[in-house]
Image (cartoon, rainbow over all chains, first blue to last red; front, side):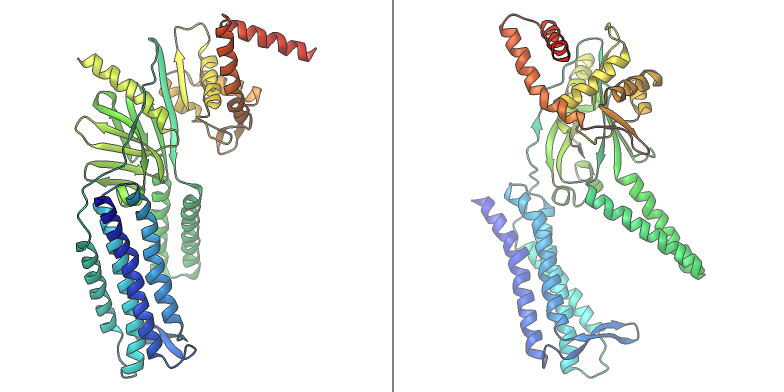
Length: 328
Length: 120
C-alpha cells in the first residue's frame, strides 16, 4: 500500500507535473503568436537578439525539452521505484524533472510574451531570472509533496564460497568495463576535443588553443583512468585499480564482512556513473546491471559492476571465511 | 577469469593455468571475444614466472581456444562457445558413468578410444 503511494507521487511529480506545466505553457504561447509561421527571436546574445526562427520553434522546444527530459529522468527512476528501491535520489529525480520542465517552459513562454507584449528592445534577462526562480520553486514543491524515502537498496544475493583444497591457490582476474555505446561516445568526444585543439593551434589563437588543449588533455586522462578497471580477487582480498594505477581500491580479506551479488542502478543508487562516493558506500559504477557488493567490517560497502560478480563473490567469501578463521 | 593452481600437483603449472582457462570457457564465465588478462598480470597475481603463463597462453593458442591480437592481447575464439556448449553433455556423461560405477578416468579413456575409432 505505502509503496504504491510513493510510486504514485513520483509519477505525479515527475511526469504529471511536467505534462501540466508544458501544456499550459504551449497553450499560452499558441494564444500569443499571430501565426505559427511568424518570425520570432529564438536566441539572444550578449548584445541583443541574434537568432530568428518560425514561431513554432518555441512550443516544439517546450514539449521536446520540458516533457522529454523529465520522461528520460523518470525512465531511470521508475524501474528502481517499482522494484521497491528507495533513496533520497529517487525522491530528487522527479523533483529535478519538474524543475527542468518549469525552467524551459518559463524561458519559452516568457520569450514569446516579451516579444508579443513588451517594447521592441526589452531585455530577456528578467525572463531568465523568472525562469530560474520558477525552476527552484517547482523543484522544491516537487520535493516536499513526495514522502521521505529511507534508503532501501535491492537485496543482495549471497553466494556459496568457492572452496579451495589446501595447497591450492585461487585467483580471479578480470576487468570492470563500460558498455560499448557510452565508451564510444567518450572516445569520440575526446577525439573531437583533440582535433579542436589542433585546429586552434593552426588558427593561431593562442589563448583559446591553450584552454582547449588543457580541456582535451583533462578529458582524455579522465576517460582513460575512469572507464576500465583491473580487478583481482584472491585469498588476500580484493584489488581494483585503473590501468595507470590511480584510483585504486584494496580491501583485505580480513576486512571483508560479506561479499554478495547485487543489481546496480547507477543513477538511482549512486547518483550517476563513474567512481562514486555516497554516504555508506563507495562505487565503481561503469554501467547498470550485476555488480559485486563487498561489505567491510566497519559496515561501509564497496560496489563494483562486474559481469561475473557471482564468481568473484564466491572467491572473496571463501577468502574472508579463511581470514576470519585464522584470526579467531 | 578464475585460475586455480596447486603447486603440489603432478601437472605442470602452465598446464594447470591452461586448464583453468578451458574450465572458465566451459562454465561460460568467459566467452568468445573476451580478453584474457595480460600474462604479466597473471604471473604477478599467482606469483609464478612470466614464462610459465606465456607457455600456457601459447598452448591455448596452439589448440585454437585463444588468438593473439595486436593491441588487445590474448582473446578467446569461437571455440570458447563450443566448450560451453559441450560442458552440459560432459557433465551428463560423467554422471551416467558414475551411476554405472565408472570414474572420470574411465570416461576419459572411453572418449579417447571413441575418438581414435572415428579417426580411423
